[in-house]
Length: 107
Image 1 (cartoon, one colour):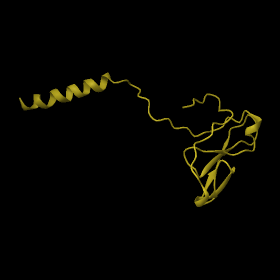
Image 2 (cartoon, rainbow, N blue to C red; image 1 turned 60 degrees about the vertical axis):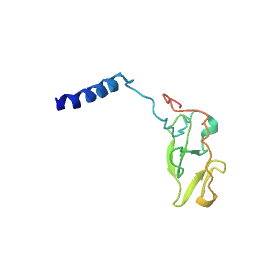
Image 3 (tube, rainbow, N blue to C red; image 1 turned 90 degrees about the vertical axis):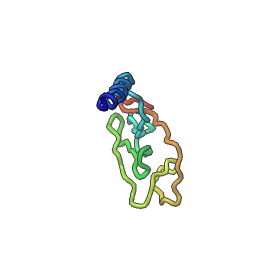
């Protein structure tokens, strides 16, 4: 009798979990990767939105952006388009690049 008292709540919980949607949307993770499809992107660094010590750089139109890393103890400052010491770095929302890589789905 005791085992039935345990199995019934477990079965109900399992049934509820199966009724939940199979794909629940989680928080979007957007790196801010540019598509390098617009002339304004070439040679201009774009902040890597997940890690402020990194940035994207398009070397040529139509090529994949390269992920670059700032020197130690610095963060990428989008307004200055450069890596700056942490005391000078200020968090700001990422700027949408002029283009995205083919197939990229924005948040």
